[in-house]
Length: 163
Length: 326
Image (cartoon, rainbow over all chains, first blue to last red; front, side):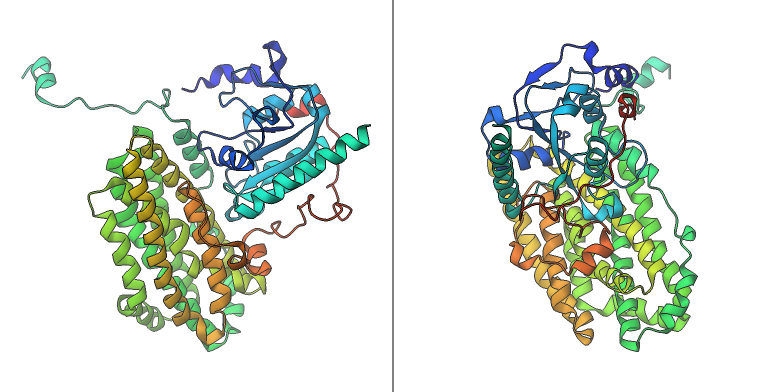
């Protein structure tokens, strides 16, 4: 059920709610159609490695405890408002989350012309992190392998740099 | 009759309440489709006349055939397909979304007539419409799709619809993308891209509803439908290959078109929640075609391969905290 009237304030000030802490290194959004969720399942990472943003905007969003990569889809064409899902905007309205984001992986459909994976471009520009990879719908087996191996290598490198 | 008697005799009719949404996707897709609404009159097709005059005779024939074939498919989708899906709707909002799809398919079908009337003579147009009635591969796909639209299985109707929206159009869509990549018939390509954008949402939405309905099916039935989907796609694919050779052999483009078919067959399957059928080695679509479809698709966004040194982050936007309130 949608209650659009209430959503607004929670999007703007997510920290007025008790946020859900997570140590996940891959945080993702997937709508009820679940294509991105299925891609994540195919990555076959350990449960504690991944965390899904709440489907319902008014639910408390996540609070990242560790550096993470964000994955999200772009559903449709058009460049106006609504490209980045509200649930993701709410998540990134938490300053701590913006500080810990390391990269974006975007899902989309080339049929949407220049809006292909546009939400990834927007977040990459706004948070100054790389758009690491793009794939279509629920991804091909090659996409799954590239992202799985790529993220593993990325985190390995990341922890080396830290030490 | 008193109102009470009426209430006893007739079924209760429900008024659609957009303030009580059972499936958020209905509202989301409705909003997207209505935001995307367009009419062919807004595309300056006549600016392509010069470019049309410079096409070879073979190229003009391919154009006529491609657009006539697409007209037939959109006619089926608008006058039979999407209409047949309406009674299977799970929600009243789904019916409303499908009614938008029905109308847009009529707009698409009419758009091709705008292209024809801008570029071709009445005689050429009449000839090409005769061709659509006589071309066996074109009639075959129409027949295979309509068979399931008119059948008694609501899930097979959805499968047929996704096949049409997400796969069968693409042997035709290839051509304006090809010309556009060479800066030819660019306005026509702009119009086709609007159609492609709509069809992508239609395929996504109908594929999504297919999966929602699947939640109520037994595992046996789900397995049967999955097998049916792959079989039907294989059968339609074989026919598309024949159609592709008929149309594109004179230009030597058939192999290039087939890669585009594989790529889109995979996407049609994914729209229904199924795994791709063609391996990457067969879906390496000509980058010029992909780039005509989506101009930023060929940018290097594979941060993971190589050292990453070639990767450049786009211009940084200075952000304030309240920038996130968008």
